[in-house]
Image (cartoon, rainbow, N blue to C red; front, top):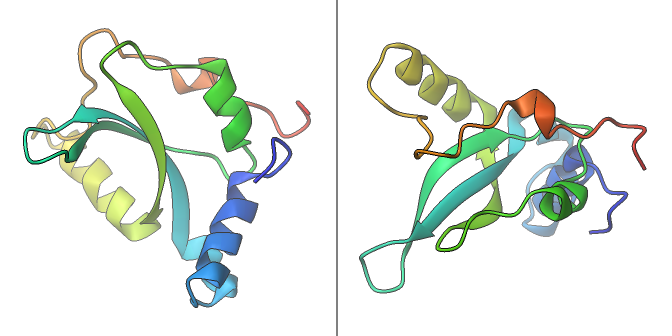
Length: 117
């Protein structure tokens, strides 16, 4: 991955690397996940997830915004249908998808436009 790689390119490459059909990349999305170490034997607990736009550049995002001390960030590939289900559950008010206090950031404020680089 380089700063010029888009989320779409990274998803396609990951699918190819793991033996999945890279033409199915539209069914998957790269997600920016903020979390912290979990209680179980070095586990990691994601607490906030944001789907990265297909044309956003994840390595640029990583440089633009760093989590607070005690928190960490990682990028994960998720099925879009699972993200849609989670979004519907959050709209119904079950608390899923809520950010920890102090982490509410408008996606427009940290979105990188395709022509930024």
